[in-house]
Length: 268
Image: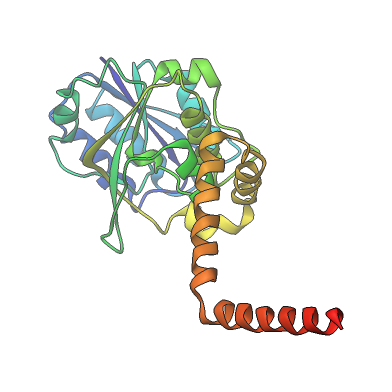
């Protein structure tokens, strides 16, 4: 099974070498790496060309694009792998034998959407857990694309990244994957990547209204049995808390006395 690694780049000269070195040091042969450059104006292209000369599995194009997800879509068109993996130009694989260890798992070749954890580069926090559709749309909990291996079947089935969402197109795509019951998913408790949590998605996250749309999606889909059950349980918990509160107990006693007094008055 061939793996295609896709890396969008734009003026990434200061970080790209470490990213590519973390790929080259993998003890894994059946892969290609596509660098999709947005016409960098620094030393990025020179670095890319040097790496391509030394390592034939690394390839590149450089042309204007409309952002990260446009570049990723171009990578999808170029990729020949059975699985596709998207990496930032300032991310690194967690260790040198990661890909070989993953490929020994029996889920590869059988499962469409395989995902694990990432470690944040700056805070060192490990992020990731098993997800489902409800968690994604209710809690606004995305899966970092740096922790996901997508089978080619997924892109043939549901398409590519929606460029209307310049920051959260991956969230939109993952929600579609989790909603589709025909796309099989598997969580593996492994750290896949060291991920720069202060990159483009962090600095420009308020420029994309997709999170608000996901919230509305959850509300509009509350007739779903699972979502409705979850909402009812929360309401039940809140009601029980209300019934046990001092304010409610005192208010109920006062109300009972008021009703008794009114009944006595009206009897007369």
